[in-house]
Each structure stands twice: as C-alpha cells, then as structure tokens.
Image (cartoon, rainbow, N blue to C red; front, side):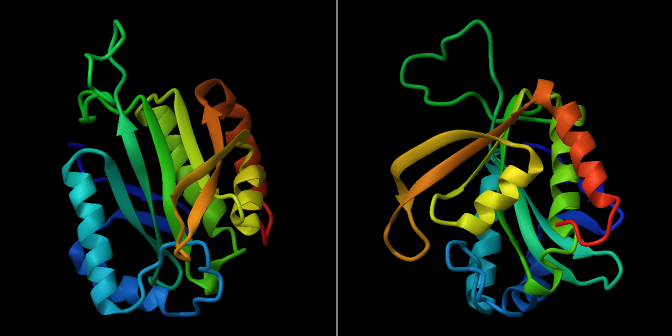
Length: 218
C-alpha cells in the first residue's frame, strides 16, 4: 500500500484521513447540506464513522488514498477528497485472463493511473479558492511525484455545478457512461467522464496557478 502523505498548500492542507478526524468531518458535513443532492456526504456521527471506515478499507487494499481538507487560516476540517481507482500498469500486456485491473500501487511502484473523486466541501469554503488549490495539490502529486500518465474525474451527469467545476480546471470531457452507478438520490445515474493526461499537465498547472492568483477563484 501507499504511505500516508500530507499535501501542504497556501489555503489548505490535505491530511491523510484517519478515524480521529470523525468529529471534525461530521461538523463540516452538517454545516449546510443544500449543495449535496448528487454527492455522497455523511450525515451525522454514525454515518461519518462508517464513511471513514470505508475509505480506510480502500486505503488498506491499496486502491485509494483518502484525505480530509484542513483550512489553514481557521484550522477547521472543511471537507474531504481522495485518490481512488489507483492502478499500476504492467508490461507487456495484457494482464492474465480473468484479471480486471493491475496490481495495487506501492511507494516503490506508484500509480500509473488515478482518479480524483469523493470530493465535497462545507458551503462556507465553496467558491473561495479551496477547490482550485485542492486539485492543484493532488494533480501535482499525481503527475510529478507518482509520474502518472492519466488522472480521471467524474460526476453525476445531472450535476451541472460539479461538471462546470471540473471543466474549469481544464479537464477534457470524454463522454457519458449511461446507467453507470447507483445515484445518491436512490436512482441510477449516468456518469460524465473527464480526464487530464500527463502531457496536458503543464498547461493545466499554469491555468490553476493563474486562478489562485486572484481572489474569489474556486
């Protein structure tokens, strides 16, 4: 499995999630839930503990690296995000028959591909630069530390707010996967897929840094 890591920014710090974050994460999730219609955000202490335990199980299995988002100025936990669907490509292909994915990554063999997802923020820090810096920190780690070749981002196709935020990062829209996954509202969701490739990262990085240079950029 990958070692825990802390990603430090100017506005926020991403700390590898632990069960000790339960109280603070619960408080952040209860601040105001009006923007969570399409997002899996725990509601209450018991749900938050289950949420963290699920994330830590994925971490122990080597397929995810979950974070809490700490706001530097206030010191508060203001949300959560994670790397998930982490895989290491092996050559020569293909993988053996019946194997659906590559081996779990380690520090010695970091992810070749990754997804950034399960992201939510307390309303008090939405549209404040937190999301931009969060993505800058995570994408920098993926492309410059892990040397990943691709990072995926996806969301419920109905979630216009999330889709606009992903597109504003500079990610390329790939299409809609229909009837893909159970939706947060109890139905079946179509999923909008986006990606950033390693060769696109320098341009995306410049764009994100420019956005963080003025107040109010999300």
